[in-house]
Image (cartoon, rainbow, N blue to C red; front, top):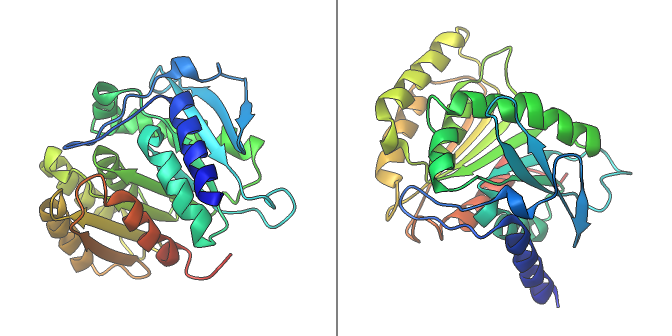
Length: 273
C-alpha cells in the first residue's frame, strides 16, 4: 500500500507540476500554467502547491511543499530546498520519507530546459540566488513552521552547478544554507567561473573557518571527472569546521540522484531529529 501511495503521489506531482526529464546537462520542462496563481494554495496528498512571482528574475515559479505531520506541534523542522522539482521532488521525497529524517521539503520547479540554463548558470545564477534567499525564503517561512537556521539546498546537473555557486557565496555574514547537496554538477559548463567563485569565497573567509556541510556526488557515466578536481581544490583549502565529503557512483547521470540523496541525508543530519 505504501508503494502504491508513493506511486500515486509521484504521478500527482508530475501531473500538476508538468513532466520533466534530464540528460547531459539535466532537464526539466516545468510550466507554471498547471499550478495555482500567486497567492493561491492547493493541498493534495499532503503536498501544498502554489507559485511565487520573482521580481529578481521576472518569472513565476511553481512550488511544492511537504511537511512532516508534527511540524506544527513539534520543534520547527529543518527545510530542504530541491531544485528541478519537476523531475526530482517525488523521488527525493520518497527517499526522505523512508529515511526517518524529520524535515520539510520545498520543491522549486524549473521553467524548461532553456530557462534553467539561465537561472543555474552565471550571470543568471545571481538573480536566481536572490529569488531563493530574498523572495522564496520569506514566503516559506511565513506559511510553514520551519527552522530558518537549518536550510539545505539540493541541486542536480546544472542545478548541481548552481548548488555549488550558492555554496561559494558563503561568508561569515552570509550563510543562508547550512548544508549543500550537489549532485553530479555540470561544472564543465563554466569551469573558469567556477574556479573564480571558489577563489572569491576563500578570499571572503579570511579566518578560513566555514562551519558548513558540503556533500558532493558524481557519476562516472556523468560528471564525476569534472567534480573530483573541484572537490580536491576545496579540500586543499583546509577550511576549519567544513564537513566535506565526496561520493562516486556508476549508475548514470539521472539514476544516481536519489541514491546520492539517500547517502547524503545521514551526513547532513547525523542524528535523528
